[in-house]
Amino acid sequence: MAGGSATSGRSVTSRALAVLDAFDSSAPRLSLSEIAERSGTPLSTTHRLLGELTEWGALARRADGRYEIGRKLWDLGLLAPVQLELRQVAAPFLLDVHTATRDTVHLAVREGRSALYVERISGRESVPVVSQVGSRLPLHATGVGKVLLAAAPDDVIEAVLRAPRRATRHTVVDPARLRRELGEVRRRGYARTAEEMSLGTLSVAVPVRAERGGDAVVVAALGVVAPSHRRDLTRLVPVLEVAARGIGRQLSQVRHFH
Image (tube, rainbow, N blue to C red; front, side):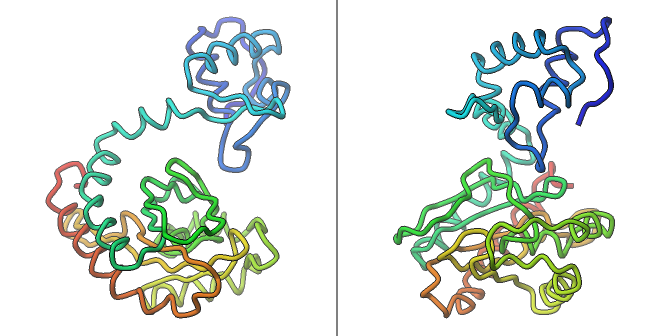
């Protein structure tokens, strides 16, 4: 997040970037005054920049008057070589999982302390899934997120465990319990959640590993979300693992992932 007081010598571009940088995973929706304060930009200048950024599509204005990141930035981000290659490589494997399970299928990568959802195929049953392509959800409260958190550097894990946010009454927020869960994810090779991100849903997810510098590292997580009456979700782990291995093999051959 950009901070500090307004600087008269800043260019229009630097001020616009400061406005965009005011948003992060802890503050995905902000009011005009909050953006001005977090970006260190005068209120009148912030108002003008918000108008221009919203018109272009970098930001979107909600019905309550607050702003959030717009679709245009996500569309541009998908053109980055790594994201583009990941989605292209993974697409047929996600379709295979969806065909086999008919559940909602997710592919996510870690972005800071959030799980960034880069692809999704909706399931046959209507479940209250909050994620969309481009969504950033807490690592500790989702199946794909727990997989990514278990493989994250120690400083990321410690930062998440210091202040885990409760999304539902079932969200695990006790640091000691979360630490044990992450150990279990590493040991058994998959993560599962029960109504931690949204009520009425269960999820299970596995890591996607690719070769980088001679080592197999977790580059993404693949998971499914299903209604909470489906208590047998772990039986889908082998289906996910087959798809994850296929994605990982192909990614290991892509130059951008090395």
